[in-house]
Image 1 (cartoon, helix red, strand yellow):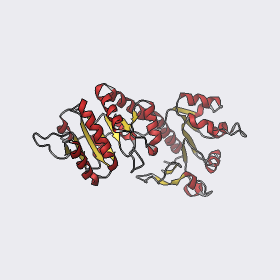
Image 2 (cartoon, rainbow, N blue to C red):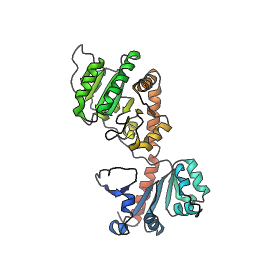
Image 3 (cartoon, rainbow, N blue to C red):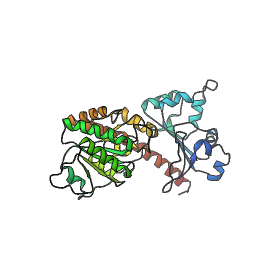
Image 4 (cartoon, rainbow, N blue to C red):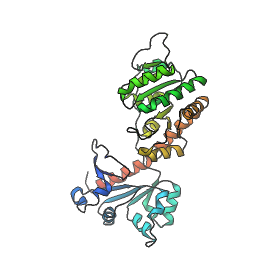
Amino acid sequence: MLITYGEEFNEKPKSLNDLLIIGKISDQLSYPNFFKIFDPKVIICLDGPIPYLLTSRIKQKTNLSIFADARSKNLLKRTLKIFPNFKKSMLNKFDFVFAENEMVASQLFQISLDEHKIKGVGLLQSSIAPLPFSKNDIIFDNFKGRPTWAALNIHEKEIEFVLKAHRQVLRTAFQYGLYISLSDPKTDHVLKEQCSKLGLGLSDVEETQKPGEVTQVYFSKETESSTRFMRRSPIIFNGNTLAELDQQEDPLVAASFCCGILHGPNTDSFSMEYEGLKSVGAASQVQSSNELATELNKVYAANNAANMGVAALDFISAGAENTDKVVELVFGYLKDRELI
């Protein structure tokens, strides 16, 4: 599978498995011989700017073409005053269209998009399967059923922010435990210094707790621990979101574990994902330790954590049916032409 990516990416995503990621769509489709070199049989466009060369290719009807995630906020941008029917003609060139919601589908009908072309409503989503836990995982023994939350992918500059919030939470919910993973495990000395400064007991989650030892914070140097912590924590704070620091993690991964998500104001890398999660009540933004502590107290005192988790799971699964429809359309097209 060949993939180009949009203008919002500052760095080229990594290619993996059978996915060949070749570059920004504007760079690749500015060369007339692009389609001669790669000759794709299927073209799937996720809502966004469509380069002229791609539009021309779709008009030729030599490929299966699907326009997915058609969003309301972008429909108006597709109308040109000098070509009032541009929006209608462009979208009608695609074989199939998937709309963001029922309202967008209605808007598409109003611009005379052929009804049979709309195959589904909802944003496409990929399913993210939770990793299984070992029955003997030491994590389950450490907190003995205590309520917990997790701070994941935490930058060195965010450690104090997180720990101060946790210390405030302990004043009203003294049993609350914190799991923390660092974006750079080599900064664990900063974590130890801050815990000592704030009077918080710290232990490595991989080590057996000593009798009589009081621990409020557990951390791990293992990179895969974040997913383990998500399974154990109904609420997580996603790090590297207070400012432009290191690489951010996809909030949809935590959502797939039925976690409510708290985050800082810098969500540029996954702005659409956070926007969607916030719209359904699955995520909330905080800007200070006090705000983070307040949100944690809210979810501890009521069923807010469960409500956020259910909303998160509903959000990421909303487009699963449409994703299956796209796969079905593609496989049917390729099979009919004996390409598979």
